[in-house]
Image (cartoon, rainbow over all chains, first blue to last red; front, side):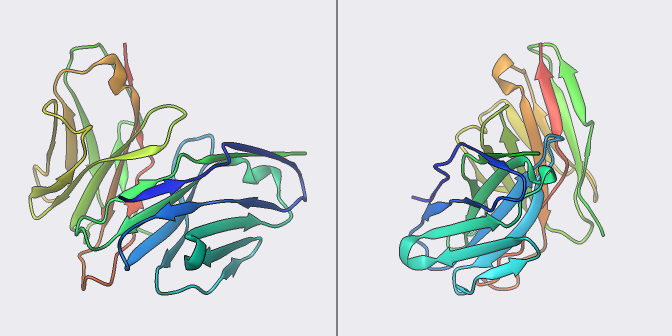
Length: 116
Length: 118
């Protein structure tokens, strides 16, 4: 069965610190997609990144970087030099393709608090 | 950039009343979804809809829920007789038609409707 685990429920860092949010997933599919979303206090879901199971290259976008490791079924997210505006809940999600419905399975989220 | 729009942003309803949440997906999208997020919890899949029928639904999506695409633009979620535990944020999402099984088009989420049941 598919499952996404975000073991860190809440992390607090001081501004300018680096922080890594962990995501571990379970799936029987060989073809799947992984996502990260940011949910600020206003409540909307902001798309950050999508990665397919065939592409294990790490990605960097500004202060954000993602480390995808199929061997450990992990898709971790690092924010470098964190800022107060990064404070939000971050969700990791999995979408399988074999089932044909492409629904997203979300983790329970990690609340990040960046203190000034 | 085209976006998914949801109305209203906040709905307050008495327990036992019917409520309809509305969504306008992105115009060329053919796959539609509803998700629910109870306050402080994770986002949970409710239902997916394609070609005018439900393609999958979760255990949460029981007989009190229904979805409809009444015209070419709206996608609605109806809760027939609301309960206190239906209080949540409801997200609509849409995605383009699948080209091949390998290509999983990303879902675009609306900003959500916060439903409060009194």
